[in-house]
Structure formats: C-alpha cells, structure tokens
Image (cartoon, rainbow, N blue to C red; front, side, top):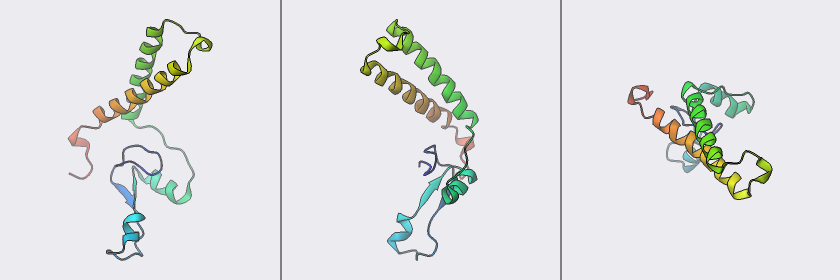
Length: 115
C-alpha cells in the first residue's frame, strides 16, 4: 500500500468515512492508506513536511551513487551537452535505484507493525 499523502510505503495507518455503513461502497471509496500520524494529520489539514526515515536516507544515498555511475558512464559532465533522452535516463536511474533500495530495506519482517 502507498501513503495517500507522501506516496511512501504505508505503515498501518489509515482513514475511512466511519459514517458510512460497513456494506456501503462509499466506505471503501473513502479509504486512505497512510504511513504515519504525521501524514494522517496532513491528510486532514494538508500542511507540514515529513522528515525522511533512516531507510529513505539510505535509499537516497544509494540513488546518488547510482546516478554518479550513470553520469560517469556518459563521460560528459557538461549538462548542456546532454540529450533529452540522457536526462530521462538519469531520472529513471535515480527513481529506480531509490525505490528498489527502499523495497530491499523494507523487506525486514521484524519491522512489520502488524504481523
């Protein structure tokens, strides 16, 4: 599940319209998965900023390394000489490295809040 506010991995928090009866389809349509109390508060007030978790900081560091390797493989550091496709690939490298690493770090069953 993905947090409805920050798009990070949801961690057991959520919200739904409790006024709708259990069989009412609007209850499921209103359901929002969230990653933290902070996002739960933001989803109601829509303000504030979220600090990255330890795993997210590690994933960012990994993404920086992978981006550096990609730039090095091009052999050019002058961004003005890059093609749009090369920029697209850089973004893809960063996003993929970040999300893959975050998934690897999140695979620890000891950290699941509700076994």
